[in-house]
Image 1: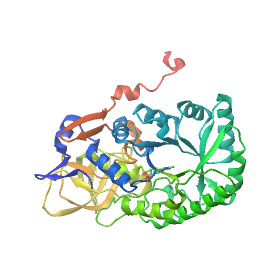
Image 2: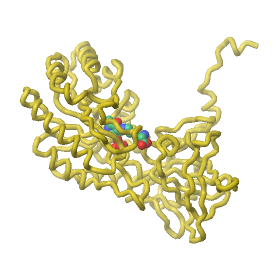
Image 3: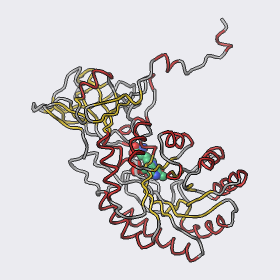
Image 4: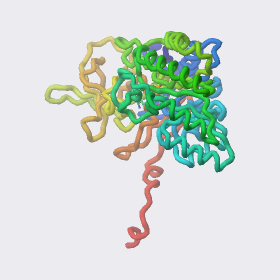
Length: 422
Ligand code: LLP
């Protein structure tokens, strides 16, 4: 459930009409709802009652400081995948002891910074990485707490570009070699092996691949304990999908996911970490755009809006479906539109043959489910300024990332001296 919907015929974000925010901020802009963020955070936590459980929000989904701070205040931890994300999480007030560091290619500098800050755990993805971490930690007189990310060779049944748990994917260590790798790591002086980590993919709409992977984790933990390792932490990754198309997609509820986790993992008595990203922020954000032109092609009608693939790349990159809703409610006849942006590529298409009420130049639309992997994946392609982000709370809103000026964008480039001389 989210807090974007029609009231008196006009879309509101919580208690604010979108047209009012658009009037002050200009379009396009991302709009996030505080109440939705908090609701999703709580719904997830309620799925793990009484367990030794830590939610480590996956910062990559939406790393705006205001979003992070909203979740930090609720008690969230963080899953980060770069030194930049680690700095963002700390800056937003997420304590280091609630932070895990994932990713296939942590550099020595990133490791050193994370060790200095005292993060809870490194999720290590290769033998080379654990050796490097040992070297860095040793040189600092520290000990790094780690889990290895296991590649369980499970088909997550999601889009190929966001599936991570098959043996052909670059992620994790192969299950078949895990015992040896754990044994070797335990012998390293600056490494403390404390857990097992897994993440099989994103936007999963079925519990079975999770269950299959978690069962493999359970048998591995049994073997590792028999080998003498003290395995007390299980990081189960993120991945639970959201209903992008609310009419036809019904992903499992966090409550069902939690029950499945407890049934399979519970008997191990470990501390459970989960790294949801999309589920917390996806439906807590929308992209608001204005119609620039309506154009009749030879046999298709194009709705050309002022948002584009550089602002929200998911439809172009993953053929992702996002609901598009006019800001003003209409009961008029429906028209079939190809909803496109201004960028000079045919891939700059948000939807094909989408049935919408008739729209005209100047009308506002909202693109739903844009809170996750939206602003964070945006670029300035075509020298389009990064889209501003707005956070709503009840009847208030704040611009939490302003739209850059053209001078700021162009000013990032540097003319070398030899070109400057006339
Ligand atoms: N943990 C790890 C190690 C991850 O790699 C990811 C996402 C997550 C947690 C969070 O997964 P979530 O709960 O959000 O599904 N840009 C793509 C999604 C990429 C996901 C990458 N990893 C998209 O727009 O669909």
